[in-house]
Length: 309
Image 1 (tube, rainbow, N blue to C red):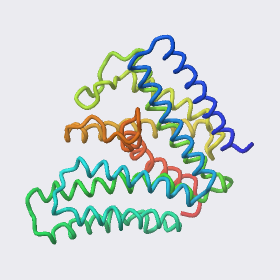
Image 2: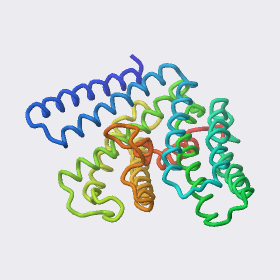
Image 3: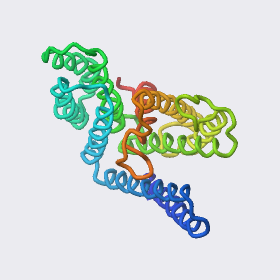
């Protein structure tokens, strides 16, 4: 078996065990918490199966999967953003021109343009398109909302499939494992922070942003995910300590990203970004940590492990 097959087999075994435990708990003591746990596990089944199918089908399927995630994430962001009717042309350009072009450049491995297309050219295009409508009221807030939607939901998310373009000596043909490493560490860090917080959490770390997050949960989750990342070095081009440091950076950035996205939700007066994923909220509720961690992980890997920059 390849490393990827071993990894997904392990994940499926863990999910199967979690499913059985959750249903036993439901039989013994049914409660809203157990119902929520079952809904989350069911959502994880869908997400893991979707990832496994995309990984099996190859580059095009992976790019399309994350383009689909970006489209839905941007839809959620724009839905609660401070946009107006006059911004519809700019929003349409973001959805139907900029997003497809971004992922097309990833598919064709055009890193030079992929890396600057949204932060430079789309950044300049959006206010130009919007200003043609002649509406100046709250112009800065409105256009900044669209620009943020593009940066968060498209640009940062697109850093996940672009790992397929890295050319790391001695790691050829295994780049899918880096995507798996990133996603697993981000999601495990979130789960473990929640578990540690429930178990020993006493001191709120950001009560106005996310009342459930605690200092103890943060430290416990980050340390745990760092150790797991070090133990997963065998699926990466890193040594044990390098994998641990990468996992540490991913976990901390993921946590900070979650806080930033929580601040946006509080500002807009919503609890979740959406309800697309039963038990998990919307797409952005699952991607909020990933969008901050992915660019950092990509650039560290590219800078230190690629020899032909």
